[in-house]
Image (cartoon, rainbow, N blue to C red; front, side, top):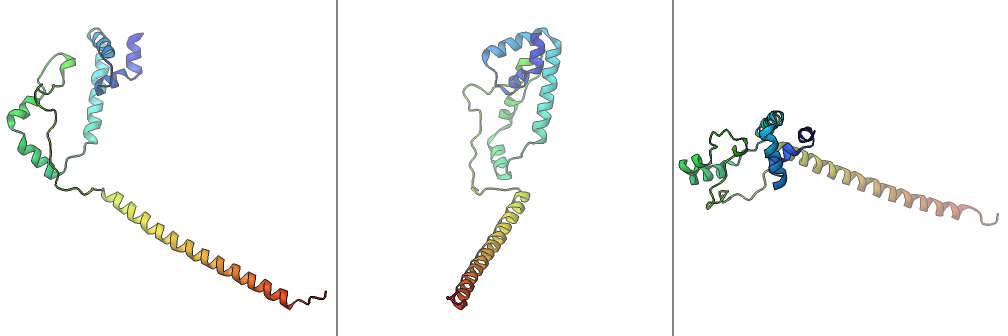
Length: 165
């Protein structure tokens, strides 16, 4: 019954994303060692997540990519490649203990890049806002002038009406 909960409550996904506590990790490792169904489900989820991340991956800007490639030697790349292991818990390789986990990249260009569809949407919203602003001002001033005209006509009719009635 507990194994069914692992299949349905999202613990496997949390485990793959590294969001589980140490206690949950230990429990899951014990269950994975004994239950083939949970292990199969974990592999399927991992494959689906990897496919999702690869579909939605955003490549780095070319300038930064070149800088990173220049700073990383072939031996460093081979250190990070996963080795073939049979233990499911050791699929990802850990970074070396004394070396940083990331590569610093100096960025020359500080401009924000926006996808071309967002640029078109922003331009359309900007133009429409100006059109609505001008239209609103036009109707405001027109209503104001009509109100003044009504006031003038009321004053004129009151002057022309005989006061003796």
